[in-house]
Length: 241
Image 1 (cartoon, one colour):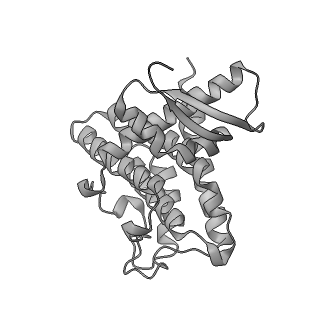
Image 2 (cartoon, helix red, strand yellow; image 1 turned 60 degrees about the vertical axis):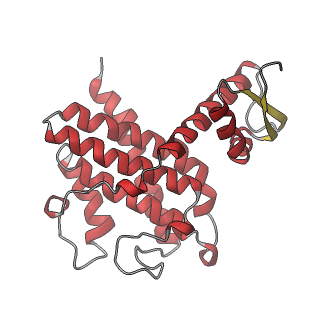
């Protein structure tokens, strides 16, 4: 098994691509952390300005901080690094892909919440990575933080360890988004079986939800699913249907 190749494909490439995407568009939009009018240089915006996708990925981020911290305290390096790989998959394959249009707006319409959310994710991941991938983590931190904040420590290895803000963790939202991502995956698989590419619009995607909670999640995020699958409407079938 090519373990090194797996790390590159499954982790380093998604991380590098997400980092490059953020740096490119933040520079084009002249975005800097703290320019939302808030005090501090953390790039945070009021919760009321965050979309459901923002709140979801930040909930996943603070869950990640708690899990990685617990694993390191137990000297379990594998349990400390595998969750970061999983998080980067969710960040690049779902959050960023579903949020791209928010970064493509003109400078006057820049969605600052999207930039601030992605910035917080990348800077926090850099700190969590520091013990395992010290040089890559430091390169990210120096460019994202130290280069623009003269008061910041010059190296990620001199910063405080991130702390999990439990009030930002929303278990229901994370459960709902898992249902939505699984539904999207099923929808793409159905398209593939029918030989209908995503660029071909379809009238409807109908899902059979085994529980009321899953049915509610699909209905709540029907617009997101419709856009992801390129269909006009999303419906939930009852058991008879």
